[in-house]
Image (cartoon, rainbow, N blue to C red):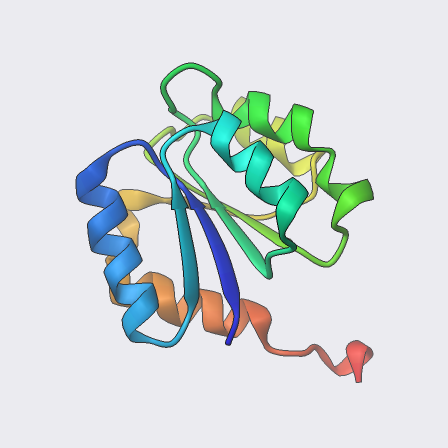
Amino acid sequence: MPSVLYVEDTETMQNMYGFALKREGFDVTITGTAGEALARIDEHQYDIILLDMMLSGMSGMDFLQAANLRAKSPGTKIVVLSNVDNPNIVDKVRAFGVSAYLIKADYEPQTLVVYLKNLLKPTPEAK
C-alpha cells in the first residue's frame, strides 16, 4: 500500500482528498503544518509527499528548503497540489525535485488518485 504524507492546512481539503486516497488504498498521513510534516519525514519514509504551497506559518517552499528531500529521501515523489499558479514558483520548486505541480482547481479527488497511481507505476528504465 503506497504511503502519502499530505501537507494541507485547510480541513475541507484534508477531508476531501484524504478520503479519496484512503478509499483507493493509500496509507495517508495528514499534517496541517509544514513543521509537523518535517517531523513526520524524520520518522517515516513516504512514497509521495502531497504538498500545498500556502500553509499557515512555514510555507510549502520553506518546507522544501528545510526538508532536503533529494538527499534524505531520493525515492519519494513530491507533488505540489496548490492554487498558487505562478510560473516563478513552479520553476523554484522544480529545483527541489518536485515531480509535479498541480493546480487544485484542475484535480478533483478521484482525478488526483488516478494521477498519483500513474506516477507510482514503474518506468521501463526502472525494471
